[in-house]
Amino acid sequence: MRIAVPNKGRLHEPTIDLLERAGLHLDNGAERKLYAGTVDPDVTVLFARAADIPEYVRDGAAEVGITGLDQVRESGHRLAELLDLEYGKCRLVLAAPEDGDIESVEDVSGKIVATEFPHIAQSYFERQGIDAEVVEVTGATELTPHVEMADAIIDITSTGTTLRVNRLAVVDEVLSSSVRLFARPEVVDDPKVAQLVMALESVRSAEDKRYLMMNAPREKLDEVKEVIPGLGGPTVMDVAGGDTVAVHAVVNERDVFEVVSDLKNVGASGILVTEIERLVK
Ligand SMILES: Nc1ncnc2c1ncn2[C@@H]1O[C@H](COP(=O)(O)OP(=O)(O)OP(=O)(O)O)[C@@H](O)[C@H]1O
Ligand SMILES: O=P(O)(O)OC[C@H]1O[C@H](OP(=O)(O)OP(=O)(O)O)[C@H](O)[C@@H]1O
Ligand SMILES: [Mg+2]
Image (tube, rainbow, N blue to C red; front, side, top):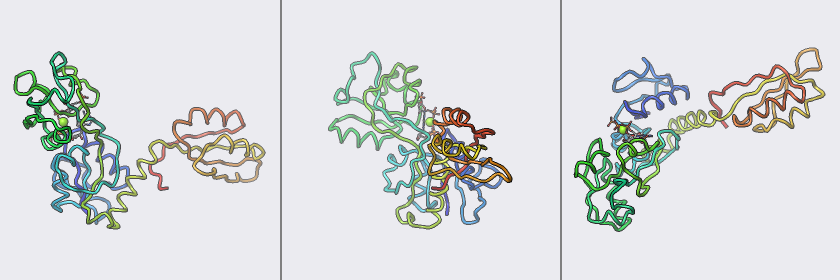
């Protein structure tokens, strides 16, 4: 199985990091090269531009790909979405000069809109019944309304800084995007693909969980169990030759702050909180 992943840009590192945490260690790290082997002899990683990844998958150069939903939509290819990996979160928006006369999508009729996403833009205007002229650019889209190349743009925003700096205001949201794992429809039932989905999912599932370990007096066990809002009951182990038990549990990271002091109050001691690398449900 070949996995196409971004070779540079803001999605490169988090994607490599995710594969590593899933246990698919790349050989020779992830230097700028075309492909890398992994600990699994049947899994190879291909490096490609984020925008080209849907094409690689459609053409069969890779079975699965990891890139932004915006790129998959722009490609127009019908690919199966397997997982929302929830990073690279951004919005594709219609934006226009703050002090101009474009305040709604209707105001764009008869106007020029510059974008790196011409297909998404075309179908957005068709859906809205708006007759706008879409002009494709390959970067610095935010500049175009200020040099009379365009009246408005459709571009990516996340913090909003770039729009603000260029005195542009959001008129409408076109697409909400994040990084997805997707595949050619023919390979979705492949066992290797299922193995990858499970591995990536297990990393995501573990991220907001923590593993708690503690000792507790045996007679306090019921109170300890009540305090732990675990995923199922905690694991309880005898500590040799005493009235103490060891208790292990998985809890939501958001609950740790409160749970630890509650545990202490009901008599637990030696409480350890650790991160979990992967959690297979
Ligand atoms: N500001 C942002 N916040 C969050 N995600 C973003 C942001 N900008 C882009 N992305 C996501 O990352 C993807 C790749 O963008 P990036 O800027 O890394 O590459 P690029 O500019 O297309 O790369 P290249 O340099 O190869 O042209 C986008 O398609 C989008 O899904
Ligand atoms: O809302 P913001 O947080 O300001 O992010 C939006 C900017 O991020 C992306 O550019 P990027 O930084 O990837 O630079 P690039 O043009 O080199 O791709 C995108 O093209 C916007 O310009
Ligand atoms: Mg970019």
